[in-house]
Amino acid sequence: MLGAVPQKREKESPHSKRIKVIWLISDIMHQRWLLLAACFWVIFMFMVASKFITLTFKDSEVYGAKQGPLVLTAITEVEKIQVTKEKKREFLGELQTIGRSLSEDLVHQPLIHMERLELLRNVCQDTSLKNLTHTTVSKFVLDRIFVCDKHKILFCQTPKVGNTQWKKVLIALNGVYPSIDEIPQNIVHDHEKNGLPRLSSFSDSEIQNRLKLYFKFFIVRDPFERLISAFKDKFVHNPRFEPWYRHEIAPGIIRKYRKNRIETRGLQFEDFVRYLGDPNHRWLDLQFGDHIIHWVTYVELCAPCEITYSVIGHHETLEKDAPYILKEAGIDHLVSYPTIPPGITAYNKTKVERYFSGVSKRDIRRLYARFEGDFNLFGYQVPTFLLN
Ligand SMILES: *[C@@H]1O[C@H](CO)[C@@H](O)[C@H](O)[C@H]1NC(C)=O
Ligand SMILES: *[C@@H]1O[C@H](CO)[C@@H](O)[C@H](O)[C@H]1NC(C)=O
Image 1 (cartoon, protein in one colour):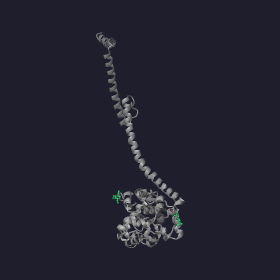
Image 2: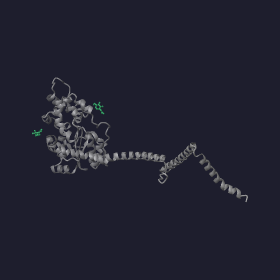
Image 3: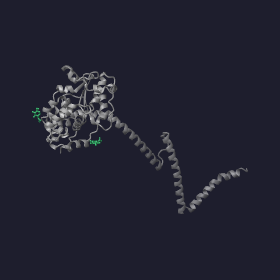
Image 4: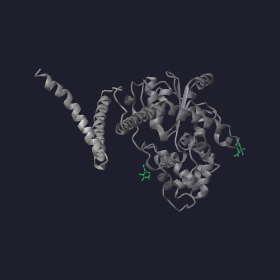
């Protein structure tokens, strides 16, 4: 029985304590300070609880558990949104990077080339430009086109746009030399020995067959920048030492087109422009023979409105166009285009302005009138900064 007393007391004591507290509370309930204290206590407990929940949430996030007590308080809700947003941003960033390279390589490139060919077709049909966009597929044109029978490729040569490299690629493919590096420099342009025949060397039916069935391409660049490049290469530097440009052609142009006959400097760019823009330039062209390939229009070289080319590469985007051409020609697994030094393919407006600064507006407009077909067919902007 001894034990019964404390047992009873133990049972009763919390109850009586509670009653006492309740009494006490109800006694002083009217006092505001206790109300406030109670409120603080509740808030304190709430904060402890939410802290715990936040920690739980973070842990479950780490292990990827989704069934944890995720949304219970305002704090965890904010936390959750922040984490998700951050991850979303990261993910979207990655997705965009992948998407960009995907769209450029797989979607964007073919689109660009389809648009180029569509523009070409439309400009070819424009009757107001007919004289500037059409030509006959003469022996001169067939001489410009090189044949790779092994892989069914035709390449029209347009000087000053990295043609030597393309020739090397095709020579290597034709198999006379095992690789691009083993082709001797003096052989590249020697078509008797380099195993890269001209289309003109075939019979009429062989020519027609190849024009119909083969993959056909050529490369263009801004028409005026190309002329500057030709002028520098043939009349200023002439790295391959071709003396006839300085000793035959330059004096011929100067005699006919230089206004100041007393001046004895070598061929100036303004002399060159005056010759090219002369509607009667053919008179001199005939005397210069095939050397004119460096400055006649792309229309005259490759007959782009008469021959349905598969791809037209742009020198300005050669870094992307070269691999695309190799892929479209089905030879990307066999050969790669030699490395392009950075910065050499970009259009340089400053250079164009500088070269044309000494040329009269009349002569520039005449030059443009002759090359307008090239500008339009290949989507090059009208150089209004030179014409107006
Ligand atoms: C187009 O060329 C033809 C023949 O060469 C010529 O008779 C005609 O005048 C030219 N038209 C234009 C608009 O230049
Ligand atoms: C553009 O051409 C000018 C004049 O020839 C030259 O000074 C400049 O370095 C060139 N700019 C680039 C980006 O190649």
